[in-house]
Every structure is written in structure tokens, then in C-alpha cells.
Amino acid sequence: MPAILPAGHPAIPAPRIGVLLTNLGTPDGPDAKSVKRYLAEFLSDRRVVEIPPLLWQPILRGIILNTRPKKSAHAYAQVWSADGSPLAAITKAQSAALQGAFGPGVLVDWAMRYGNPSIGDRLQAMKDAGCERILIAPLYPQYSGATTATANDKAFATLAKMRWQPALRTLPPYYDDPAYIAALAESLTAGLAALDFEPQAIVASFHGMPQRTLELGDPYHCHCQKTARLLGERLGRPLTVAFQSRFGRAKWLEPATDTTLDALPARGITKVAIFAPGFSADCLETLEELAIRGRESFEEKGGTHFAYIPCLNAGEIGIDMLRVLLARQLEGWTPSA
Image (cartoon, rainbow, N blue to C red; front, side, top):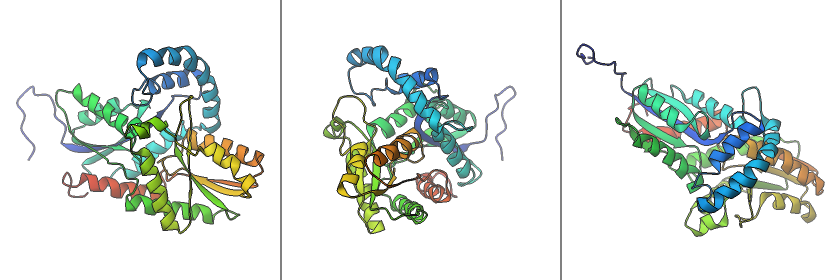
């Protein structure tokens, strides 16, 4: 029986549970102004760039934000669609596909760590809709302080400003989860079967991180290696692990994806397939950096056959996996989970 409120009492929505899918972020448009605004937020995050602000901000404001946005905007324009950026469109589709998957009292939404819709805005919207318990789900299989941690930081910072806070849970990294490995294997097997050639090598390209993050105790590198090892064992063939998206002069995790692709033809490997198991959704780094620039570079070095295998995205395999992972974390909150 619903509670009887005294006269004049503000309306209180029925209690609900929220699931907030979070991903890295995207500019609002493929133009230099939007990209500059996005990069300013992204590259000002102390989790992303661990250089003291007094040293870093003059470099960021004086050089990077006056040169990189135009180049990045050109790259975004190559993958932008009528639905917006691929990352936003796919994350939105993942949220829609999961709506109703955990029962009528569970609201599923999505947000970006940088850009729109923001984590803070969507958390407040969930609270306003009656969500008294919320699962924050960073869609990063492998943990890093610059990805998983900063998404959770933003959620916690939002709660710090709330008088009436919802209870919060966070999705752990799932780099070695059997459901994730099985989904990757099924998706990759289907992608390879659809090719009109047999790859001599399969490259697993993970997003790069500065070498210093590993030395400081970030588990990301180890998580990536374990994902590749478990997936290779499941497929029954070895994978070539590489790290993409280097930035700046610091030493980054190696081997680099671009140099790895460039070196393969000289070793007689002219047919290659590449995929990005660290990304839950295709984005600039996969569609432009790998599928476009990776192909061009590989073919310039003598490669004859190149294929990019898409991420799990909002396909049935990926959604089934997310449903399993999220339901596990909702246990005890809802009988249907």
C-alpha cells in the first residue's frame, strides 16, 4: 500500500533501481570548437595526465589546444554519422537494448565521463526518477586509473553534493570473466569466418597507457595480457598483442600497434586481422585509427589483406554478456537479477 503523505508534502517517486552505463566521452560535434572543449576537459583530468598542473596546463592551453583540435576534428568527421559519434550512438543503443532486462523497477541509462550526457547529470536524473540504488557500470573490461577510476570518481563527486544520496555499487573490471572471454571468442570467430581470406596473424590492439602507469602499480597492462592469453587459449591460436594511441614524448606500453603493423609485411605476413578487445564500443580509436589509418599504413608497407573486426557493440553477443555481468552485480537488490 502506498504511503499516505501529509497535505502539502512534495511528491516522492516510487523507489527504483538504476544502472548507469558509462564510457569515455566524445565531443558534441566533429568540429574544432567542439573537439577543443572536449579535449580541455579530458586532458585536464589528473587521472589522465599525471603531470603537476602548474607544468601541464601551460602546455595544454598554449600548444595542444591550439593545434590538436583541428586535426582531431578531421579524424572525427571521417567516422561521424547521422546518429552522432559512434561511441555515443553505440553506448545509447546498449542502454536501450538493456532497458527492461532486469525487471520493471530497474532503469537503465548511459553517460560519458567527458562531454555529454555527463555522469553527474544522469545520476541526478536517476535520483529524481526515484532510483535509491544505482549500479555504476564503467564499460572498460581492463581496469586503469585513467578509465575505470576516473568514471567512478565522477560518480562519487556527484554524490558528495547530494543531501539525499542513493546507495551505489560499481561494476568491477571483467578482463578475465568467462562471459567476456566467451563473447569475444564468439564475435571474433564469426568475424573471421566472414572474411574472404585467412589471416596469417590476428592483432589484439589495446589502448595505450604511459609506461609509468605500470610502474606506479596500475594493473592495466597485466589485465590486457591476461585477456589476450585467455582468448588465445579459447580460440586455439596465438594473438599478437599491441598498444595504440600513443601521445606525447613519454615512453608508452609496447609494442605499439602502428609499428607492429608496419613490421609484419617485412616478415612475410601480408594478411592480417585486427580487433580491439579493450573497447566495449567502436569509436574514433578503432574506426579511424585502426580501420582507416591502420589499413593504409599496413598496405603501404606491402600488406595485401587487412580486416578490422568490430567491437561487441550493441549486438546480441555483447548485450547478452552485459546482461550477465550486470545481473550479477544487481543480486540482492532485485529478485529478477
